[in-house]
Amino acid sequence: MLEANFIDCGDCRIAYLAEQGRAPTVIFLGGFNSHMRGTKAEALAEHCLAAGHGFVRFDYSGHGESGGRFEQATIGAWAAQALAVIDRVTHGSLVLVGSSMGAWIMLLSAVARPGRIAALIGIAAAVDMTDRLIGRGLDARQHSELRETGSTQVASDYDPQGYTITRTLLSEGRNHLLLNAPISIDAPLRLLHGTADRDVPWQLSLQVLERVTGHDVRLQLVKDAEHRFSTPDNLQLLMRTLDEFLD
Image (cartoon, rainbow, N blue to C red):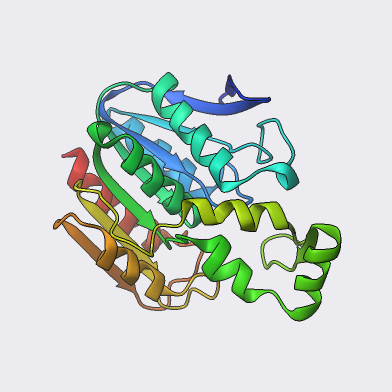
């Protein structure tokens, strides 16, 4: 197993894995409470290695092997960490692949570093999730807990302990919302989304398609695919999509 490298980013160390290869380098941006050694990340690493392209993946603060506490992190901090990886670990043109919340971070990164981006691939894009998904999904008791204590627990199909959601995460997330205005991105963008996704409705990817200003933007809906988008067929589609930009 590859050993992680680290960069200092603010008050914590960010863990990353980098495999060298020709440009464009592919960067994988994982989802909320995920890590850089998951199924999609491993499949992408193997595919890029076989194709001779560089591949980089990392853990946000409070995730995986990185430092920091999950409960103290924000969308802004995670987006800044993504830019630190882009600026300090990579050079040349990039293909960003963002999964779930990672697709939101991917778009924020593309807006901030337009000259570096060759193409973008969003999987089950949870753009503006703090507002459109988490905030709107809380019940009255959870909203009351947020007001009184600053945090609440949210159940999850992926973690028996659930997630801790903080008032800071939701309020700070409003500083990074994208879907209320045009998203200034000209790089080619591909969006993949399953119709059986119970966590992020596919209509959210459709809104991304409508908001991005570039013209080379496509959304592919996959019947019965779930949020993880990690079945062999799903992964094959992801690799074929990536090959469009590696070739």
